Image (tube, rainbow, N blue to C red; front, side, top):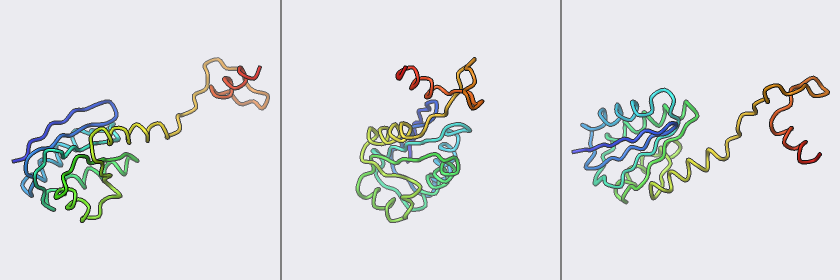
Amino acid sequence: MMRLTIVNRETFSIARVSGDLDSTDAGRLGDALVASIGQRRIALVVDLTEVRSLTRAAIRGLVVVAKMLERRKGEMRVCGAAEPVRAVLEDLGHDHLMRLDPTLEASLQALADRAALEPAPVVPLAGARKASRGKPRDVARLALKRRAG
Protein backbone atom coordinates (compact mmCIF):
# COMPACT_ATOMS: atom_id res chain seq x y z
CA MET A 1 0.00 0.00 0.00
CA MET A 2 1.30 3.43 -0.99
CA ARG A 3 1.47 6.33 1.44
CA LEU A 4 2.06 9.89 0.27
CA THR A 5 2.90 13.13 2.08
CA ILE A 6 3.26 16.39 0.17
CA VAL A 7 4.80 19.63 1.38
CA ASN A 8 4.17 22.67 -0.83
CA ARG A 9 6.51 25.63 -0.98
CA GLU A 10 6.08 28.77 -3.07
CA THR A 11 7.76 27.51 -6.26
CA PHE A 12 8.22 23.79 -5.61
CA SER A 13 6.75 20.78 -3.83
CA ILE A 14 8.27 17.83 -2.03
CA ALA A 15 6.39 14.53 -2.22
CA ARG A 16 7.44 11.76 0.15
CA VAL A 17 6.24 8.37 -1.02
CA SER A 18 6.46 5.14 0.95
CA GLY A 19 5.35 1.54 0.62
CA ASP A 20 4.94 -0.54 -2.52
CA LEU A 21 3.90 1.18 -5.76
CA ASP A 22 2.04 -0.75 -8.43
CA SER A 23 -0.44 -0.03 -11.21
CA THR A 24 -3.29 0.54 -8.76
CA ASP A 25 -1.37 3.49 -7.28
CA ALA A 26 -0.43 5.20 -10.57
CA GLY A 27 -3.61 7.25 -10.93
CA ARG A 28 -3.79 8.33 -7.30
CA LEU A 29 -0.09 9.25 -7.26
CA GLY A 30 -0.35 11.17 -10.53
CA ASP A 31 -3.46 13.07 -9.43
CA ALA A 32 -1.89 14.05 -6.11
CA LEU A 33 1.33 15.23 -7.78
CA VAL A 34 -0.56 17.26 -10.40
CA ALA A 35 -2.57 18.92 -7.64
CA SER A 36 0.61 19.66 -5.68
CA ILE A 37 2.26 21.60 -8.49
CA GLY A 38 -0.92 23.51 -9.28
CA GLN A 39 -0.62 26.40 -11.70
CA ARG A 40 2.50 28.14 -10.42
CA ARG A 41 5.01 25.62 -9.08
CA ILE A 42 7.83 24.79 -11.47
CA ALA A 43 9.68 22.09 -9.58
CA LEU A 44 8.87 18.86 -7.80
CA VAL A 45 11.06 16.59 -5.71
CA VAL A 46 9.75 13.04 -5.25
CA ASP A 47 11.43 11.30 -2.33
CA LEU A 48 11.35 7.52 -2.80
CA THR A 49 13.56 6.68 0.19
CA GLU A 50 10.85 4.56 1.80
CA VAL A 51 9.54 2.89 -1.36
CA ARG A 52 10.20 -0.85 -1.21
CA SER A 53 9.08 -1.80 -4.71
CA LEU A 54 7.97 -0.07 -7.87
CA THR A 55 6.41 -1.47 -11.03
CA ARG A 56 6.73 0.04 -14.47
CA ALA A 57 3.00 0.78 -14.50
CA ALA A 58 3.27 2.80 -11.28
CA ILE A 59 5.69 5.22 -12.92
CA ARG A 60 3.00 6.54 -15.28
CA GLY A 61 1.94 9.20 -12.76
CA LEU A 62 5.53 10.38 -12.35
CA VAL A 63 6.02 10.65 -16.12
CA VAL A 64 2.81 12.66 -16.61
CA VAL A 65 3.85 15.24 -14.00
CA ALA A 66 7.44 15.36 -15.28
CA LYS A 67 6.14 16.19 -18.77
CA MET A 68 3.89 18.94 -17.37
CA LEU A 69 6.85 20.49 -15.58
CA GLU A 70 9.02 20.20 -18.69
CA ARG A 71 6.42 22.19 -20.67
CA ARG A 72 6.63 24.90 -17.98
CA LYS A 73 10.43 24.87 -18.30
CA GLY A 74 10.42 23.35 -14.82
CA GLU A 75 12.06 20.32 -13.34
CA MET A 76 11.28 17.08 -11.55
CA ARG A 77 13.88 15.37 -9.37
CA VAL A 78 13.58 11.92 -7.83
CA CYS A 79 15.68 11.10 -4.79
CA GLY A 80 16.46 8.33 -2.36
CA ALA A 81 15.54 5.43 -4.62
CA ALA A 82 16.99 2.11 -3.43
CA GLU A 83 18.83 0.07 -6.05
CA PRO A 84 15.87 -2.08 -7.24
CA VAL A 85 13.62 1.00 -7.53
CA ARG A 86 16.39 3.03 -9.16
CA ALA A 87 16.98 0.25 -11.68
CA VAL A 88 13.32 0.33 -12.78
CA LEU A 89 13.48 4.12 -13.19
CA GLU A 90 16.74 3.99 -15.17
CA ASP A 91 15.53 1.14 -17.41
CA LEU A 92 12.59 3.22 -18.62
CA GLY A 93 14.87 5.88 -20.09
CA HIS A 94 13.06 8.91 -18.71
CA ASP A 95 16.22 10.46 -17.28
CA HIS A 96 15.67 13.52 -19.49
CA LEU A 97 12.40 14.11 -17.60
CA MET A 98 13.32 13.01 -14.08
CA ARG A 99 16.76 13.58 -12.62
CA LEU A 100 17.82 10.98 -10.06
CA ASP A 101 19.61 12.12 -6.90
CA PRO A 102 20.91 10.04 -4.00
CA THR A 103 19.29 12.17 -1.25
CA LEU A 104 16.63 14.80 -0.65
CA GLU A 105 19.37 17.27 0.23
CA ALA A 106 21.05 16.66 -3.15
CA SER A 107 17.77 17.28 -4.98
CA LEU A 108 17.11 20.51 -3.08
CA GLN A 109 20.68 21.68 -3.72
CA ALA A 110 20.27 20.97 -7.45
CA LEU A 111 17.10 23.10 -7.50
CA ALA A 112 18.88 25.90 -5.64
CA ASP A 113 21.84 25.74 -8.03
CA ARG A 114 19.53 25.89 -11.03
CA ALA A 115 17.68 28.91 -9.60
CA ALA A 116 21.01 30.67 -8.97
CA LEU A 117 22.10 30.11 -12.59
CA GLU A 118 18.94 31.48 -14.17
CA PRO A 119 19.29 35.15 -15.04
CA ALA A 120 17.25 37.51 -12.93
CA PRO A 121 14.98 39.87 -14.82
CA VAL A 122 16.32 43.41 -15.22
CA VAL A 123 13.95 45.84 -13.55
CA PRO A 124 14.21 49.57 -14.32
CA LEU A 125 14.55 51.81 -11.31
CA ALA A 126 11.50 53.88 -10.55
CA GLY A 127 12.14 57.46 -11.58
CA ALA A 128 15.45 56.65 -13.29
CA ARG A 129 16.58 59.33 -15.70
CA LYS A 130 16.94 58.52 -19.34
CA ALA A 131 20.42 57.61 -20.52
CA SER A 132 22.01 59.57 -23.34
CA ARG A 133 20.59 57.07 -25.86
CA GLY A 134 17.09 57.60 -24.54
CA LYS A 135 16.87 54.23 -22.74
CA PRO A 136 16.08 53.88 -19.04
CA ARG A 137 19.00 52.81 -16.91
CA ASP A 138 18.65 49.47 -15.23
CA VAL A 139 19.75 48.46 -11.76
CA ALA A 140 22.99 46.81 -12.90
CA ARG A 141 24.15 49.81 -14.93
CA LEU A 142 23.45 52.23 -12.08
CA ALA A 143 25.30 50.03 -9.60
CA LEU A 144 28.35 49.81 -11.88
CA LYS A 145 28.33 53.54 -12.54
CA ARG A 146 28.14 54.33 -8.81
CA ARG A 147 31.11 52.03 -8.10
CA ALA A 148 33.18 53.55 -10.91
CA GLY A 149 32.30 57.13 -10.04
